[in-house]
Image (cartoon, rainbow over all chains, first blue to last red; front, side, top):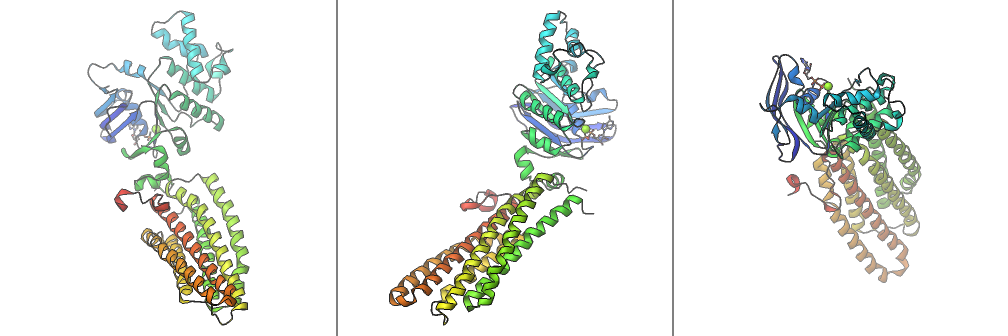
Length: 254
Length: 227
Ligand SMILES: Nc1ncnc2c1ncn2[C@@H]1O[C@H](COP(=O)(O)OP(=O)(O)O)[C@@H](O)[C@H]1O
Ligand SMILES: [Mg+2]
């Protein structure tokens, strides 16, 4: 599954939490401008694998990792690579939206200020562009000064997406981005994913198999830390090749 | 423990299988009624068609609802999609059985000493019936080999059908007074040919359910299996 044209790729990736192995020799490559969905039962390692892609696991004490994680062919765990730089290029969205307790505007502008952009006009351009890309602009353009916490759950999640987009990442990782949302907000996030894949490579972890089927080009099925099957979503959901995949997606597990 | 979804799936599966069994009964009765001019059996086939038709309508609804409400995947999805088509084929086979039964009734009126029946008539009826019953058995048993075995029999039935046509045409010129009875024999042969063809469709659907291959119209495309 190693692939020269992969946007992001892991090769024989192993991860241990202390002595517990959570990823077992996972080789998986994500193509540019595709949506790749990760499915599998709770605890199978989806989030762990996702966090490896932007070096978030190394912040967890006791974690050891071996194998390769390549972004545009370069190992992001290489000595010369700065984790902060990696996270700028690879944005992450979590299940629970986590806006700062500040204004809508400031939620996006904050990161920009850290990068040394301080002129209001410049910030405004970025805030507007990010909110538009996250399909939130029309709903909040008149209330940019309002607290982000006053937004609905679905809006908060799109604000977090806007915040992630502000730094123009080339990869967006989403860990169950819609699992706390109602169907309408969920479908907005799904529409957004389909729009964003024009400019971003997206990896999404989801518990909702229909969601994986709807939004992704490729699907990876994980089980007990192993990648069991990976392939085109339409094939995986209609004619999987592995017994375990079949049992999982038909609900005959356990 | 069987899950709620599995129970629901098994229920709809046994309904589709049940319809197949009903149609097998009709076809067996049609075969017998034509050979033996058993008008009671023939009338039974005609009368039972309404049940088959209603079953088709009910299953259409149930399969559609199952798909919408449970969003099945993989082999479950293939079963549902294939069953929609199988149910349609079964209903058509039921119609052909009725046609044969009606021909048996008419033939009994005009040719009670069975002069229009030939060994080929019995052969095609037997061959088509056995293709269909084998296809249904393969459906019940999830038997890929049995489904594939049905497919190779179709050309035999086609050949018999052509032979019957030739035989009847030759006979009609020598016995114009028996023309209607002979024509019935020819048309019955055509009905059996249709049944065999639909049995082939069902066998192909079984292969789709079991292997996910679309082998219709001689697309034996899976390399490992058909190379
Ligand atoms: N921070 C952690 N410390 C120790 N074990 C963890 C930690 N995070 C996850 N795990 C364990 O690693 C395995 C994979 O977890 P995770 O990647 O969260 O699975 P998933 O996202 O598929 O539900 C689980 O057994 C989980 O308990
Ligand atoms: Mg997780």
